[in-house]
Image (cartoon, rainbow, N blue to C red; front, side, top):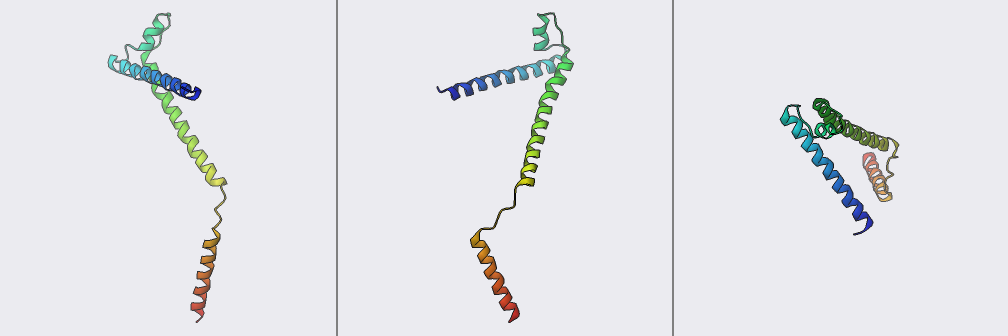
Length: 111
């Protein structure tokens, strides 16, 4: 396994663990009616508390905010690219054909 493959496997594993934690947390909060959460249970061992309602707000709003920002950055990049890209120059063959057609059209219109 190359270094890049190992890094890819590590990133994949970390993302799957975070995804599993996220889904379990959403299901736990939803099924318990905001009474129990995995994070509340874990932090309870350190005498720290968190309200599952506010935890749910963060679990939903943070990914939505990140997704919104990502979409807006992509659209801004597309707009910037469209605004700063010069128009394409016509190919020489097409330009010659158009000039020939215009000359033929003018010749027929005069005659």
